[in-house]
Length: 121
Image 1 (cartoon, rainbow, N blue to C red):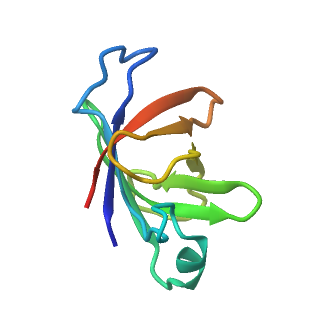
Image 2: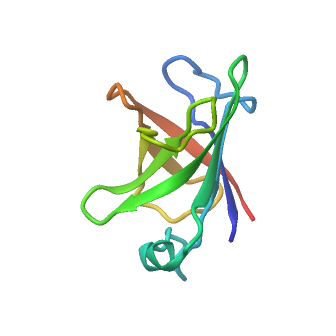
């Protein structure tokens, strides 16, 4: 399962981007390079996600999929309890997961940010 690494694409708050801020996602990709919903639904194990943020440390979570809503990330509270962990961000992309492509992440407060795919491997 490839590791997809996202780095800020610039914009509000991080106009120059920041290699210290990143998301790391494990995704099974279809032949065109998109996350594979059938593989996610068939996998008995959660697909891991990590949010790395300076000053906040590492947040562990997982990738979620809903046929109506699409892909999302869920991060657990610091006490590692997965119970009632809210969705942290919704992923939107019209491009395959390839370095240089952009993903929009909508945060729970509704703000949207562009993230650049910097690695798939």
